[in-house]
Image 1: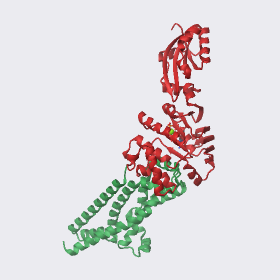
Image 2 (image 1 turned 120 degrees about the vertical axis):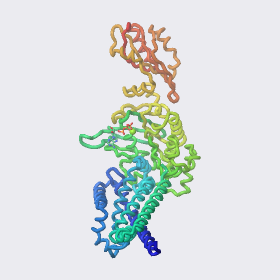
Image 3 (image 1 turned 180 degrees about the horizontal axis):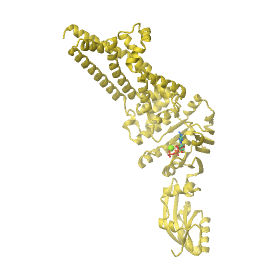
Image 4 (image 1 turned 60 degrees about the vertical axis):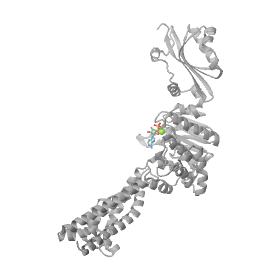
Length: 217
Length: 347
Ligand SMILES: Nc1ncnc2c1ncn2[C@@H]1O[C@H](COP(=O)(O)OP(=O)(O)OP(=O)(O)O)[C@@H](O)[C@H]1O
Ligand SMILES: [Mg+2]
């Protein structure tokens, strides 16, 4: 393989990591609090707000049910507004983030739901405020589950980012389509796929390792 | 120290409503260990959860240490809860925290600084025998050790009251014994008032001063533990006691028991005696003074805390005027007599 080609592969890999990294980070920063909100506002929970809970639930479900490829096209005006353009890696980050936020939120809500209700009661019996229950009980106890959720999110983002690449988002997906498919270079196709596999494998192992470190169950 | 007045709790509404507690009046004086016993579903957990308002009573008032909890704002209630420790059947320790950090949790919630927390936690590790477990996680502990951590955690904020919801029900008998000993120790050393609920008479017998019996949401009986074990006043109380003592008349006899005395019947009685009566040569006296023979079907001596309790199931054999005389003789000698029924003489 030529060094020019090698450079292309390298740049595409970094682009993918950049898209996944930035959108994953923002999605975690917004999705974790949303997931907590979804959980604590449930009926009979520490900040029970049935109406808020339903509204948040519907928004989250809408976000999750729109296929990514459609979401990407549908929000182009918004993407332009935020990223200044609708093509390129920065532009791809916008739909990736928007798709990932409700995804993270539901996974976090699920992780919180795994906590035995007795732990929340014990904290209440000690006079903990709802905020203290969230920071001292819910988040630490669900840490393993939340990391698992974020790992799944990152892996999903890697595959979404390849899709984003197909419509001009850059990264490995873009490379695979342009060289592997359009110019029918099986070598490039193979390398692209191989790098994606290694990337997914790497994030999964990292996630598993962090979960093991976090969990004392 | 704890006073519930006319407390009722209804879950749900309309046709699906469950009256889990009905007009409960309960007073637990400072320094005492008060047990509440009842069958599954009787409302025990609901009752104890009403004391620290984990469950808000539908009506009635809850006063702990002179403070009416039912009248407090959320923030005031959180403050008041620092005075009320609670332990649970399933321990409810945080798996993400070490033993030390679990015990420190209530202190962190109170905003105490690190060095002060250390000063509080270390004596608690000693009190509960967990010095060498400080850095372990709950998953590495046995059930008994977990409950010790939970007790230490409940004591960290130096509460005046400790609530125990079936604290030993998930433990084997030996571990139960050691946890009860610890609770008794704490009660004596710290003067802590303890309210515990249980379905085990053994627990009541071992550490309670007073006991209440709850059935279908009502407190049906309340007594000092010695009195309760000698002579429960309700049918349910007697059932609990007989189950516990395994003192039931033989099956074959029960089938022959008739409720009313007949012409040729003699009574079958359950006798309970405490104090001096335990050492009285009762059987020979009945024979001598009343001319009644006593056929002992079952007998047992139990020690209930500092009292000795003798129990006997016996047939009184003699003419009916003689057996009547024997019954009043027994009652006049501080014995608790319960006539279980009558059997045909010749059968
Ligand atoms: N959150 C709830 N919602 C509806 N009904 C409830 C609730 N909690 C308890 N109950 C009902 O109230 C009654 C008393 O329950 P409680 O848990 O106090 O019984 P318990 O004496 O502690 O029983 P156990 O020994 O099985 O723990 C039961 O009929 C139960 O079904
Ligand atoms: Mg219960």
